[in-house]
Picture 1 (tube, rainbow, N blue to C red):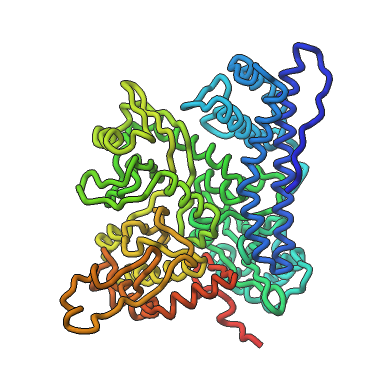
Picture 2 (picture 1 turned 90 degrees about the vertical axis):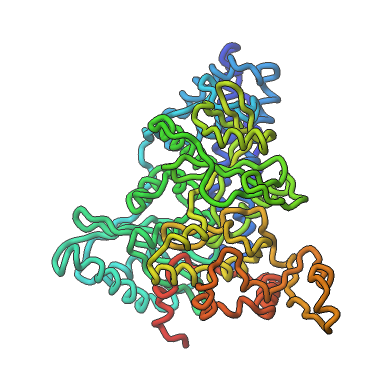
Length: 599
């Protein structure tokens, strides 16, 4: 990480000095943050070329901490320079205007405003929005900066699609050669020609445009682009792998659904070396028109501004609808209160004061603390989510009018979440909140789905869900509680409750001991079988609580090995050796490697 240092103090007229120096200190810190951000992105290419996957994970961890590091530095600089003015809201109102003038013509003005707001909230612990000292726009700013960096390359149509693809691949060469560039170009070209046929036939023109920098995630470098054919736009994404014999193209993705899954909220964020993030976001919106803007910012690593965009979206929805926050559909959790707006695509969660079931009056597990739950969500934030764990945004001190909450939800807050939620006559202040994309809980999905082939796909995906998490070194301590799992619009199973995840290395996989004689057969099982924390009896996995018995046969036909100790111990051993896997975020059947014989 680049070492952030305090900028030099410039001598200015007495009245202007404090404001100008403070604004310059914040902006200099932002510039250093962006330089460090791009430096980490630049490393991704070297990691890919050297197959340094562990270094790649270290870079991901470093980038997670980068924003908070910059924020702490900015506050420390201001404390040293401003003295008593640091906590003067009148001073910060003037500073906001000074700062706005500095960033007015910058392409990253929105990111700078988000950082400025983060500084004010860290200093003042603002509840709700303080428009005097914070920037807030219902819609985003329009960049006024000249375009000094073109983020994509235009490839005009050619009678030979393979020739275009070869040029694209040749323009994205690495330190090692392609395994077989001509072969991969032809494999890609025949798929592109198939998708182009309904749009342009044999003679119509088209063009392919690709982002100049690859999108790196885990072991893959994605070339991201689009095909322009008249008024039609098709996504164009090539996943590149570095194999034993060089780089190869794994497949080509040409549909909105496939590319949307690559940019899913259940995958970790990309590293991409592009300075003009605004132009990059505009390009991505052209191929992912239905993707929330917040998720696009998250996808390229600007998660703090992603939070800004998410809050804008929520603000617009609340003011354009008259809906109330209500308790979310599904089984009540003992650890969280989940609530939502009925027609909004996100769900909100607050941690209960203590584990308790309110509505069902079931006995809740003990020993789960607020600190433990928060550490679990932070654990997931730093792991490879492999497309199976829902991304979570964390907010503090949000304020809403009390009238926007249903009486049932307010009652639940009062009974179980007084540490997280404060309620007065007019407002509800949520001191700490998690926000996630809304998915349908798996038991509810299975109860409502009536198409047998769709059911087959989801049931089998549940097995792949468990395998993917295991391969990433994740085990679910509450494996049997299928109410923790959800089904996305693309029919993929994901985990949305993270309070019971654990590193697979901490789990001990066993078979439940059988009674040795008639006397033991008569003993209560809880007296005969003593399980230590972390012990899991694999032969009980087949008893999925909430997983219908009639669907076991389809599941077992493909995933019977998940019921064996050997499977789990082998995965644990691989993870313990440091083996890292990459989970393809698209249908495995689309991979060219099924067609290309390995030599």
